[in-house]
Length: 402
Ligand code: AMP
Ligand code: MG
Image (cartoon, rainbow, N blue to C red):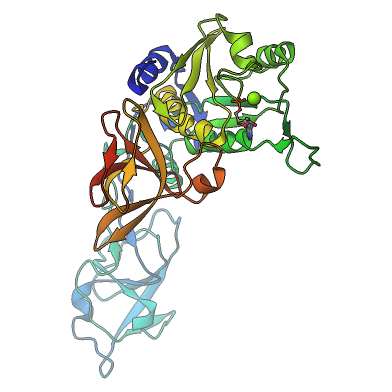
């Protein structure tokens, strides 16, 4: 038996981190930056209008009110995108659109709503201080500023930022391509009829989606039965197009533990019992240089194993700190027991009581009870040295992706 840490350390020492590459912006969405992106120019690049209205000299309209408007001749129109804008001087106004460059000489923009909207001359009904509705060059981002740091994931907002500083491509860590394969002769595709003794495959859908949640690209492979030759052939097939492979089932102590049977001693794959519940039987190793994670078949075991071992590894492959799920400290609502020497991950539901997180353990904690996992939003982590925790005690809780 080895600890969770020992198994994870072996995995992290083994997973290769792919080289960064340059990707066009949309291809880079959701990947992790391998370089800082800096702004070559300030944003906005020039002083411009924040409103549709009139560029004026603020002093000219200092006395404007509804009762005594100030009338100014309008010398021209400035639209967004216009270049070579003429300067104005005191006593004049220019009609200006949102985003259009402010003409030299002007120091305020009067929104059209404060005027009569005139074309040749405009009547202004309200005074405004200098700077009114002007967006100054550099007030968003200054030239040379890092707008997205190395190690940041390119979310929609960050991708927009990178485009806004003029970049067409960025250097990123590619998303790991992960093939997910369920093994078990009892498994059928959802949507098909079940014969006695059969169940619908759930693990491969769950794990493929979990790959996406961890920042990878998941590919679900059709299930394979407990046939050694078929399992080995399928694994060899998928290796060519995978940065990692995740299997479920066939790794415990049964007579038909086909994954264990065909992969023991192949490449660097080795099987271990890990001091955890659920998820005791684990396997990991490199096959032709590709990491292969062999997770147990019970759905909750497969899920917990993924979050504890595969997720950190996929993060490492993206150049991110190899953390599992984020944790919080929460007050337990019921007494819990846990076997000595085992790290126990129990399904639970988080809520807030007077601003403090509390966690209620699920009633059903069996590793086959996917219903309780699907209804949970947290895993309560009970360390190896804990055998009983009373209600009211603080426990560490992993938040499940929501
Ligand atoms: P195994 O690890 O192959 O011995 O499977 C342990 C338990 O998990 C058995 O009850 C299997 O039927 C179940 N199981 C294995 N694979 C899946 C799967 N892909 N979807 C749902 N249940 C599974
Ligand atoms: Mg099986």
